[in-house]
Image 1 (tube, chains in turn green, red, brown):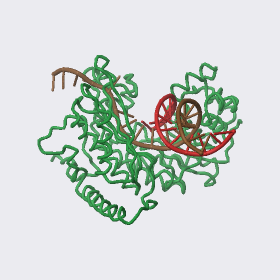
Image 2 (cartoon, protein in one colour; image 1 turned 135 degrees about the vertical axis):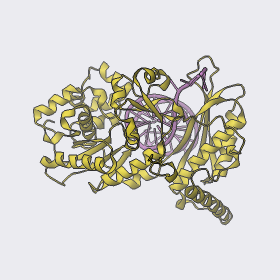
Image 3 (tube, helix red, strand yellow; image 1 turned 90 degrees about the vertical axis):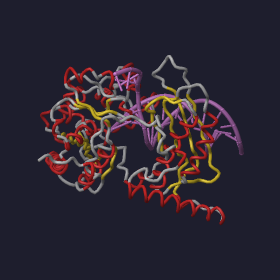
Length: 437
DNA sequence: ATGCTCCTGCGAA
DNA sequence: CTAACGTTCGCAGGAGCAT
């Protein structure tokens, strides 16, 4: 096992507190003050600057529990600006794609690059530095680069690069001696490994597996029986055997399920308000469905009360409605969702969240039926295409279904809070701040 | 015994 | 001012059902 095999080289590039960094690019005044970015509804803290981490604010903490830091330490905070982060991400991924013929975009701020057979191992660190430098030069975003013979080891390398300043943000296993590799494995606790979450960490500890080294040394067959084939693969990957292939763009482009769900800005009781919310979620999900040229066969709708309000009566339920003919028509999907909502709605509860799931997704070109439904289908497709084109051209929600309750004097209290959002600097001309002269 | 669907748990960002 | 706790995805495994 040691030294780790160096036949392959996979890099994992990860943005440093990505949302915070995106905001700082466009607002230098946020400077080196503690800054946090909040989730939907301004609920939880989902990105923290180093200064905020130093205050002891943990990831995922509800914001109201950290709010005292605003007064005491000048903590800055912003609502999430997904338009901005998504656009910055797309630009970053474009630049990163130049560095390898094989790129896997893993999340909004992370991607794998396959660097195998491109250079001698001795040059990997320099190459990693040039990646990091170019992203900073072109976009102003700080990143870290981890390089290893498997994805899991690349992830671990990235973790080391992030936590240990002396590597200047780039770490590669291949440049280390046998003893150095073992020493890192023994120094890092097992929960830092990709695929080991809270529950599995506890189980591993009970078995006496505390460090990365312990897990890498464990019996793969025992791990498979006790956990799953996923964990067994993780062990193999830690030993340097690459099991997780780079997945090409086409494979991940088409989603197998599309979810749209949100907590409400305020709790709501009436069926009609739930319908408005559900209709608007359906529209968002159906738009995504059409954008990937798919239709769906099932519509799931779910509702729930606020589980964090224990003095309120609790209720949660969901129902899945099969469609007789697969569809991507917002109106058809809304009808199905309303049908389901009628069946699970109970009077007398204060609802805090609802959502829809489109599943049994297939490519639209596979879809065939008799002549009459075909004519119907074409008409539906035209209407939806027109709607999508207008919304694309003039901005989201230019054209909406009336069932979403989008009339002029409807306050739509269920809509989420976002009280403190920055401008969409890179995608809206009219939101670029004016220069003071 | 085998294969399917549906549901749940887990992990990730 | 109050009161206030995210969202979206894939995978594996097991239950339940049909054959």
